[in-house]
Length: 241
Image 1 (cartoon, rainbow, N blue to C red):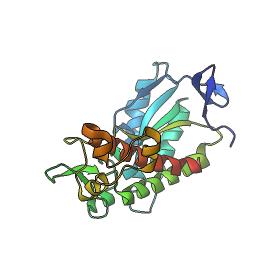
Image 2 (cartoon, rainbow, N blue to C red):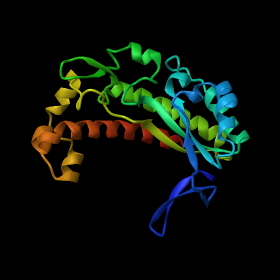
Image 3 (cartoon, rainbow, N blue to C red):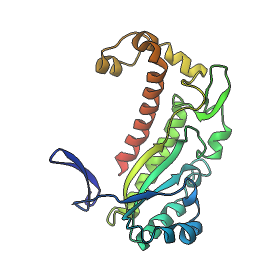
Image 4 (cartoon, rainbow, N blue to C red):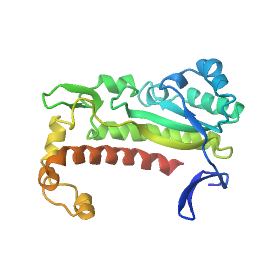
């Protein structure tokens, strides 16, 4: 797959290569919802970037605009952002606002937000649901991975040779607000189980999460499950591009 950006170790320094040349990203990040409208980008964002000596821009990409109806994908916004970046001689670093952004699920599609039974929320210890879909919700992670796979396949089909898109951050500012742990029924059942074998092997711990990590158990538990979810999503997209 010629032309795909990659990271190479140069004298011990991980270095991004684009078209087989070292690329130092002089980038700026736009506001969270700015790239949801191509006209707004054209009139108010791209002109502001001129003269800043940037060679790339960090731009959100929203699941809710790409899969507004379950199973039906629209890449008009994605294609428009790539076209605009080319017109402005910029590379793109996309932020995938999928299941999580700002520790909430605000950019997930409406059809997912409405189905709280299938795509269950994380909860406080009081039982109050958060605006955050739990990382232990396998159905939600699978749907995000499926959408991200479609996106990466599409980017490859339209951009592999030109390589306008040089990098992708999978999810953004994940975590929970107002609680240190997910106290949903599903999460607490998992919390009572022994720690996964990969953690036992890697960290030399055993027993339940509480037995293995003591007072930090809840933090380790959430870090592991968020990381596992993001790795699942990332790996699915990476297979395509």
